[in-house]
Image (cartoon, rainbow, N blue to C red; front, side, top):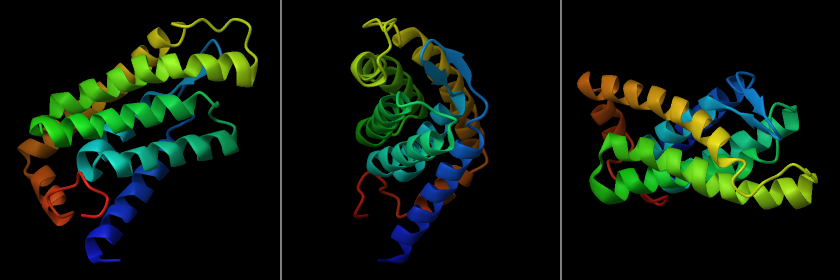
Length: 178
């Protein structure tokens, strides 16, 4: 394992810790616990670490939140799809920060929201689960967190910190092996 991989794992661990520590800041809507801080972590990890590390961070946050009782099973699809799209759109399109935020919102709200339906219906046994019933709550949650992450990343970019961090991580953070 080289030093770049160790740096990425350390940042992934810190972002996972941030997501877990901030998880009590949530609001229940139906069977879901909407957590805007997860969207913040997803965008940050997607931009700083790339899509595959971001999925890992989203999964670890969801797993720990569930083990601690501060999350629900619906945290898995929302966090993982949002993180994946945030990282993919940022690293594969043009490295534009708004694309990371849009990817997070679309991935969490639409893909995560639609994927949450069978989990709520068949795994959790929620009788009130509707096919599009999670899209709006997931949208509200992810839009707030993505907006905070976007503002933070713009500030880091203007200060020159974002470039320093990404170059310290090997520049190309789109691949797990880099």
